[in-house]
Image 1 (cartoon, rainbow, N blue to C red):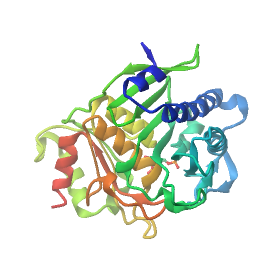
Image 2: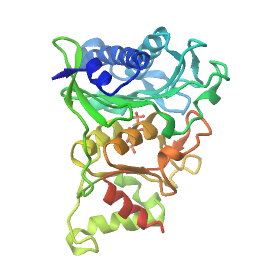
Image 3: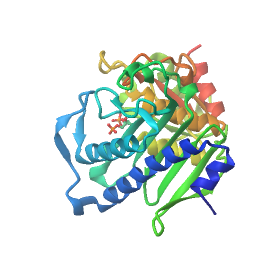
Length: 322
Ligand code: AFP
């Protein structure tokens, strides 16, 4: 059993990045406690407000965002943060070396039903030639991430994280308040018989995705010649955790349900960090047009199509687009 800091030192992670990761995890331990209190703290349900993306904010979204923002900015290692719950980036230390993007509470509609939720984060190096309040600092491809991870608030609180030397799992030991390494170099099986998609959107998808999913549904009577199982947690953090644990394909495809919003998931604090984790675990993370981590962002709240998970299954899905 190894504690977090020695595990990171073993991967030659610089000391300032280790300190920043510990700051993020300090906030996440607090979030884990508050989420675990459920009804007891009167923190379930929604606020009166909407975030920049027009989504209703949950009380726990706001509290988690404030905790992360405050603790990360206080650390002094960060030039700015961007968050799902903030319209623009929030400036920190002008000389800070890093930028952190986060979704403070992914899957927050699950809070009211005591189901899986999590915090997703992504760290880039900060450019020195832009001001700390300039959103343009964040317009860096996922390929430039120096760290990505999520903390999953489930029956146990788990951290999945990569600094570019494999994806590792940790569990929060609540007795001592420390994250303990439980699995080094997680590997996603290349083959799978499990898919994860919101099937209620099927009629809005583009033809290639409709055809691909129809073939999965046809099971051993169709061209794939085998039966597939389906899972949907409605929190990307929970669905990707399952894929990291036992394989699978997860997709939120482009759809025509709302012409102003052809994609749902956010590049900077959902798709990119999950892509880094999956690629470091031997998986693939794509849109129908190319690799997620190659996308040059044009805004901090940009949305993208996501097709990720077990390598061979993602490749099979993409073959329907050719
Ligand atoms: P919220 O955090 O706003 O609830 O959204 C979660 C999410 O962005 C992602 O984590 C899920 O995979 C997806 O939305 C679920 O979407 P559906 O509403 O289509 O189930």
